[in-house]
Length: 161
Image (tube, rainbow, N blue to C red; front, side, top):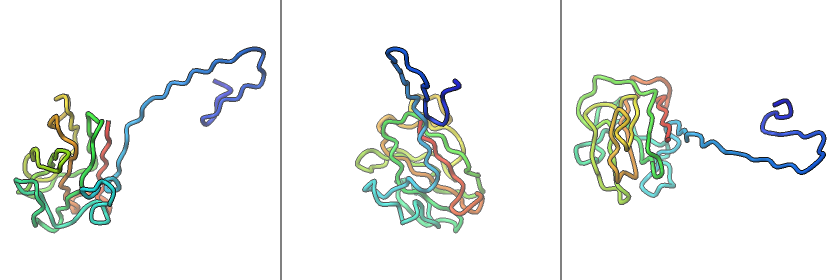
């Protein structure tokens, strides 16, 4: 369209009534690690950074000590989203601890997913992803190995869809 440029529509001549219909296309919400990982209040950035180093999740979803390269995120609220896509995570040789954990609205553990470090992939509520998100999940947290990822903080990107 010749009269459209950078979000603006220019109409040089008007000879009658104009009806403009705009359809918004919902964009995926991108949360670059760690800017959207909060404390349980959903407002305060977790540990002031969005993550804590030297920790992993135990079988009850609690924080526990780990290898120095391991870091865990705060809570990511996935309310209203059916899919979470993770990229930038690099698997390491770390063993023990859950790589991702799911919590309900009261911050009670629903389940933990496998041992190790969070992998790249799609987490979905409808079973269409690489990993299943339990139906009553409000929050998700991840364990990342910072020594195996690029950047500080690690180059983990989480896209909510």
